[in-house]
Image 1 (cartoon, one colour):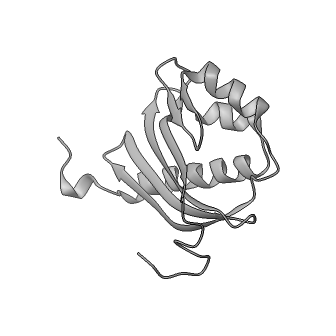
Image 2 (tube, one colour):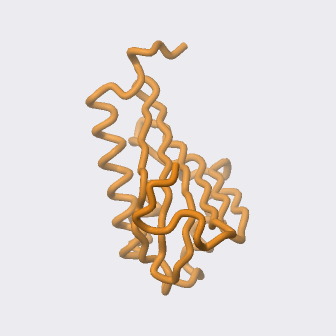
Length: 139
């Protein structure tokens, strides 16, 4: 059972925050090797995207190789990393793309013997393009 004092312990929070930032850089640079490394290499890994439901690391790899990379560039808003003890974390963020679309992303991270890995991810777009314009203070 997680105790309140185990949430966002400085060292663990710093580790996951650094990985979240590495993930974002890898995404923007379309670094498929690093993206693959940061995800759990297992058929139980899940990624729900804007138009796809991917079950297993192989499906995620195929998607990444075939996806359109013209719209990867984005600006993050309200990134949030929460760690729970030493081995579990969640990350969430809103994002804004150059094409005017905005969306949100969430990830679940677990520490395995080989290191932290994303075990579940979700990306979705706002249907209303102006719901959260860049620079907005909407909550």
